[in-house]
Image 1: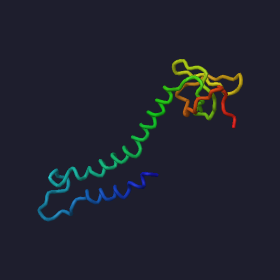
Image 2 (image 1 turned 45 degrees about the horizontal axis):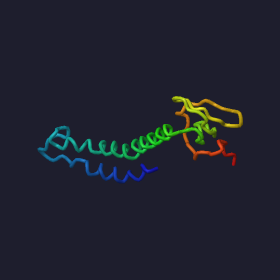
Image 3 (image 1 turned 90 degrees about the vertical axis):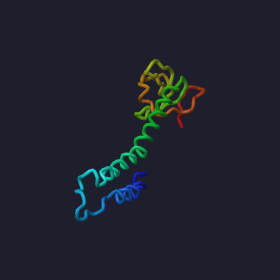
Image 4 (image 1 turned 45 degrees about the vertical axis):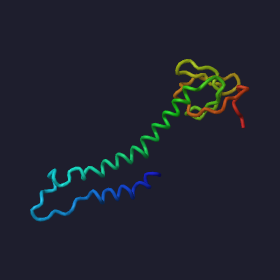
Length: 128
């Protein structure tokens, strides 16, 4: 909902970017001499706002998630994208073996692991 905070700023930029009314003998509105770049200022402002409010935070979140997946080790508690809680027992390349119950192990892609919990000493998932 942070985009609504940027709407007054965007409105102010569009007010300043509007051209003055044409007078007698003035160049037509489509000519370069009548402020050609001012027509693009609102578009440039919108792109900048979308970048800083949507794209950049998403890139940071994705980078943090990738770092978490690379730092994963045996004994870490994890949650898959499907909501299954378990403990990592083995990692081979992009495949992680996750123990979800006693005697039940599942091979999952590391890309499907979304949360890494604190390392569990006993190796058993928390059953609160």
